[in-house]
Length: 248
Image 1 (spheres, rainbow, N blue to C red):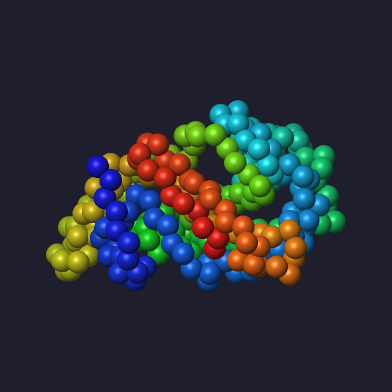
Image 2: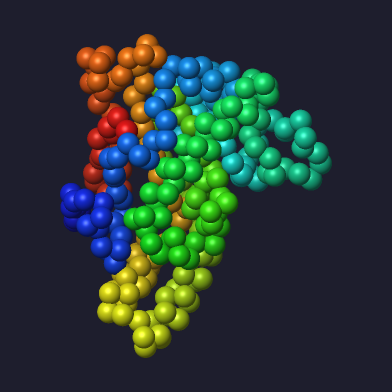
């Protein structure tokens, strides 16, 4: 059974975190992207991106990962990477161009930092307890890496590495400590109990937060001015639902 509610973002009670939320507001897109930004991305990481293919999924378009590499996978070693240093540097390919990389990374950091703030708004237990990337200095808040895609689509799959079973015990220990506090308010107790049930039901994982922009080929034209309506769906067969992806 799927329960849903459409409401203002400020109306969502923190004691009821949703399994999946989508939120429409331009402030989570710090810049309006155009064709020049797409050219910058392609110049920095190549037309297919820094991570164009994965073993568990088929895909098309440009796909780039920016952040910590998985130690079990590797494209090419970075120029600064030596023996015993696997997994400590970014994904690197022969198509990577260092001249454009700083500008590209500024774009990635600006987008990812602002986007990831939304995760902390809707999932308070992560904001308070998540042990990694959980401070004002983090380029990507409550996350491990940024994924940048252009004209991208992929087949359905499960990201098993997103699940962090070891963190569940840390969370539940903290929930028990909070519930033992006799000064905890009724509202706070409801938040803790529901967060505890959420972790029991779904485990603990690295949250995924996505933002989308439909970019016209002409730089001075807005999406609304093109006369084109894009219909793109995010499928979640495990829940038996899909979400329509909208511009911004």
